[in-house]
Amino acid sequence: MSEFTVKGGKALRRGYTTGSCATAAAAAAAEMLLSGQGVQRVSITLPDGTWMTFVPEDIELDAESASCAIVKDAGDDPDVTDGMKIFARCHRTAEGIVLAGGEGVGTVTADGLSVPKGEAAINPTPRRMISENLKRICAAHGYTSGLRVEISAPGGDKIALRTFNPRLGIEGGISILGTTGIVEPMSKQALIDTNKLLI
Image (cartoon, rainbow, N blue to C red):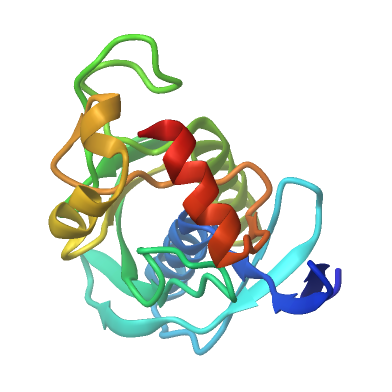
């Protein structure tokens, strides 16, 4: 996949979604927890099977949990979440992959959205990406118990006020989004035109 796309005769750099960032942070945290060692890079698979590599930051590792952040890079898309740190903290559990929302991740408060009312605003594709990548890492380590992963986005409560979340019934933070894992950049004029239609 090319790093750039052409829109209106201009080469624009692609970015990656908050869903990809959350998946990469979760994968790195799981790898550290199960290996007992820090990681300098982490690779994840996107929904189309493409591999993407990220560099974790703010690494914390102890006997009970592992945590790190991935910096959101929206490419040339005018995205309010660009530059945010998306964190994941991973703990061992008895079974299954349990996903929770932490600081700065919104909560769904309305019916009719893709995530049930009362749950963290982590959309279905990122949920699936996180689960599939964590299962792959568990298998690689021969680990057959479970993991609990909390996704957080410090400052997300303020950033969310600049999004459509309050109108959609998502409160307290941003949504973890993405259907492909990749951000296809819009021109600034296209974004303005889209906002006019939604207002």
